[in-house]
Each structure stands twice: as structure tokens, then as C-alpha cells.
Length: 205
Length: 205
Image (cartoon, rainbow over all chains, first blue to last red; front, side, top):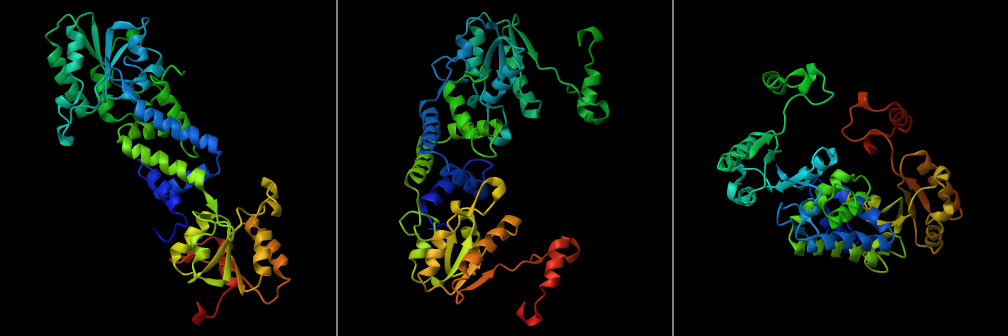
């Protein structure tokens, strides 16, 4: 036991917290000492929430989003437009798009992007299951909502080539350009250049 | 259930994490999604460490430090000098002083400082138990290691007056002045002024 801890239990809890990303030992200590001041009932609620989630987590068998059931609430919702599939990298991206309240179609969570540098090839991602979804028919549009990076673009390209077998399916991607409320002089030059090249008629924008 | 979460279990875990101090919903989400990628065994180790600590926490009945037993390892250690008691605000302060490896005496954790603005009076702190420890005899020095704030100074003053009944007990406090490695020009004027007034002979320093 480290000399500086007066309690092995305390040290163990701090150790566990400091394994989390972005949590150093000082932050871990602060969190643990805060928890020590909490009611035991609230501690039980905390550990139970973490434990129940991690033991009982499901991924939707259609779109691979986190779900409490076999099929997630979005895929199971008859009000959503099943003819649109929005392809995203991860669960947070689904939440970000849902929060805009501008999309009523379905999703497909790839679980990452193709990145040979990190050893991530197409085989590790949920690409085959996306192609199968499209091959079953009924899909009119696949929207690529991947990060605007080299890896995101490569993944876009790889999947769109695979989907060319179904020419009736429209392939689109998120618009790129100046952020809303950005001042022109502070927009980075690559974004500004692309916004200029891909300019749109005034009434469309 | 909030529309943006696809899983109620996920939302509950994020809720619990975001109740911790300094953890917002985005950080909570990041931590929870990280835990989802961990082994179930490691999750169990995490929840067990938190639960065991919070259910089984003891405070040393002598010095009120966090402890696994009735009496903490520092108080129970016969190698420590029982004639010195270092008075600190909280558990982290004990750890900070232990880390210097410059102190071999015992501690007394007050659990805060007197702060009328926050409704903390002497009665809520472990002051009576300190006076009782001193009254039992064998204590030669009480070292005040409180924060260098108005509240810390007021607490110093309050306790030292109570301890005047035992004039044989030396009362000391941490030296205040320039930090080691501080450049003089960047030292704040209050600290510099006090360092000047409380200057010490060269060979002592």
C-alpha cells in the first residue's frame, strides 16, 4: 500500500476512478471524497446504474445503436422514415443528429471509420450489414454523416463504391462549409475555399 | 425518457455520472461509453471498489482521518512521534503532508475550518476531540497546518486560545512566505511583505 493513503479501500476506489479517460489521480480523489459524503442510497443508485448498463447493454441488431431491446427505439418507431439511412461513426453522432430534430429517418452506426494507421479496416466496421440493409430494398437514400477528415472521406468513398450496385439509391453527404454564425474572416482557409467552390444559389441556402 | 437517448439504461448511467462534481453531461457520456467498451470484470471491480469504500468507510477515532480500521495506520504506528499533532482541514491535507516525507508525528483532521459565512461554527468541527487529546498529556507540540486564508487564521486563533490552558504545549504554524523556486518579482505583494517582516537569520533558512 502506498504510504500516502491512510485507507486501502480509499486507494482502490481512487485507482479505479483514475483508470477512466481524462481522470487523473487528483480528480479521482476529489470524486471519491465527494462520493464519501453522499448518502449510501445514492451510491447504490450510482453503482447499480453503471453495473446494469454494462451487464445488460444491447446493440440494435438493425442499426447497431445502443439499445435496451433487440431493436432500438428509433428502428422500432413506425413514425420514422425507413427509406432514409443516415450512416454515422458512433452512438454520440446519433445523439447529436437527433438533437437537431431535423432528421426523421433511420441510422446505421459503423462503429468507427476506416483508418489503416490505427489498424481499422472495413472488416471491423458494420459495413456488410449496411449493404445487406440496402440490398433488402425499400431504401431510397443513404446519407453519409461521417467526420470531415481523411478517414471519414475514405470510408465515404469505400461504402459508396459498394452501393453503386443499386443505382436507384441516392447517395448524399452532409453539406460542408462555413458554420452558422461564423465570421468570414475567422473561417479557416480550407473550409472557406470549399464553401466558395461549392457555392449554392441564394434561394436554396 | 429524453428523446435523444436510445437507451434508458444509458441515460440513467449518464445521469448518475453527471451528478459528480465537475462532470457535465458530455464528460459523463464519454466516461460511460468508455466503460461500455471495458470488460465486465473491470466494471465489477470499479463498482465494487466504490461500493465497498462507501459502505465500509471508517474514520479514525483518534485523528478522524479516513481509515479501514477503528484507528488509522498513522495513529497505530509506534514509529510515529506521538508528542506532535499536526492540525489539518481535511484528508487531502494529510496526504499532501505525508507526501513531503518531512513529518513523523500524528495528525488531527478538523473536517473544515470555522466559516460563519458558510454556517460552519466550531461545534461542527473536531475541535473538542483535539482539546481532549491534548488534555490527556504527552503532547509537546501542536502544529497548525491550515489554509492561509481568513477562515484558516480564525480557526488557528480560536483553537490556540483554547489550548492556552496547557502552556507547556508549544503551538506552531506553517511558515508562510515565498514559494521555493519563486522569482521575487512575480511574488504577490502580500506574501512578499510578510516574508520581509518575518525574515529569518541566513543560517536558519
